[in-house]
Image (cartoon, rainbow, N blue to C red; front, side, top):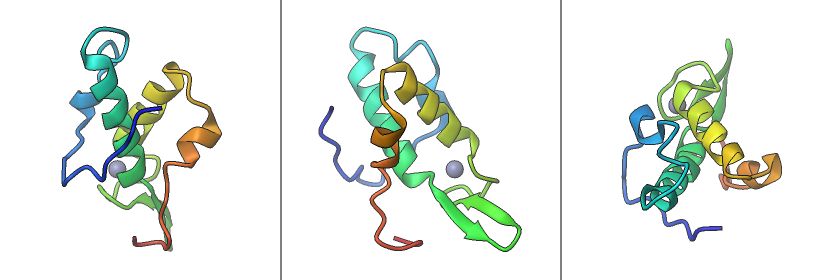
Length: 93
Ligand SMILES: [Zn+2]
């Protein structure tokens, strides 16, 4: 697995996770790192009307989360490995 930094405020957009980038070549590592980071920042929070994304406030799972999840699954990650990316100690941190 790649070492994952804190991201330094990097903004992950759906176009960073376009399928095909993740397949091979020099983009591979950075695409996987971007997907892992996106999973961590586009995570679920509970609202009275249901789960929403902490980052973009869309209904959870949001588009970015779904794309990032698919990217990691395509790369061979398990659900447990992906869930482990959510290292929040509380619902807002
Ligand atoms: Zn989101």
